[in-house]
Length: 386
Image 1 (cartoon, helix red, strand yellow):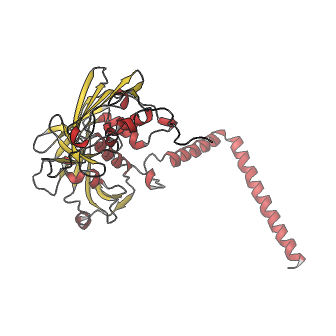
Image 2 (cartoon, rainbow, N blue to C red):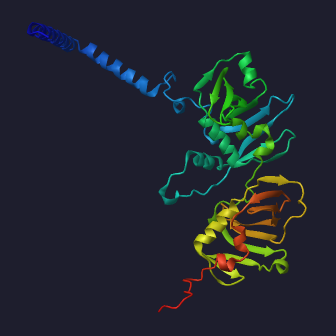
Image 3 (tube, helix red, strand yellow):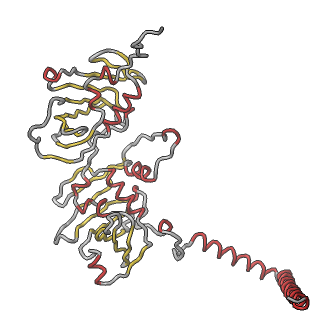
């Protein structure tokens, strides 16, 4: 490159810089002379920035989680949820209706860890009694955990992956004969969602909302129990809220001589638990808390009509839990353990005759409570120091 070429390029760059500087100076002079124009430009810039940040019309969706959910509403505003299987001609379906508020004891997060969004939703749902009404007109309690899971899945399902809506698509995604959900709020407004088939992977669903088809990243058919009311039948069999409500636990074995077990009696004295039978002494608090949490969390995995044959009933027992309700009044809940089915699976029967299969890892601690629960202090060494 020659010196003349370099000088020419430098002169061109100098002229461009001078021209740009002159334009900036001219613009600055214009803004000084017209403050109204300057203020308007600032307002337009701020308005544009707010539009990009808040996206009030939902035009800008950068990711799936930023998109509008199928349903986002506080459980306290839900009046009733109606579910109907359109593949069954003439089916009335079932409904879950919000009823009376329930006093729920607020528990502080353990170790300062905030509960998950799903747990917060479960806590909100637990603040009410929910009644399940079947197609046959039978009314009972709905399961809080499964209802909360359905609401959580609807909240996480987003209107992001929109698909073509035509006759062939409705048939392909089984939206012509899907599961219809109607969520009716306390002000009379309603949200209607039609759930088609699940995706091949099984963790996604095709839904129809406001004449638009979406692929959402939740298995809604699973969380709807495939439209079966029995899925939402209450599974929480012990109606006691938290271990701190329990004041006494009695265990009476039905075949004590056959298996060599002894009845158990545990009672709370102030803030501590003591064993009164089969031995007397203090109970290790950690083990007692684990036992109570396990018992209170027994859920019905399956309801049965009759006791199966050849059930191992050597560990058959009757559990009696004395507790104080949220209103402070005392109560007693009795649960029969009819026998053991597998490693941690047992057959239970409630006082009103409900027969169900459930799981427990800690019931076995009641077979030899003096070893598993009793606080014997520091165990002596089994060897002599030299």
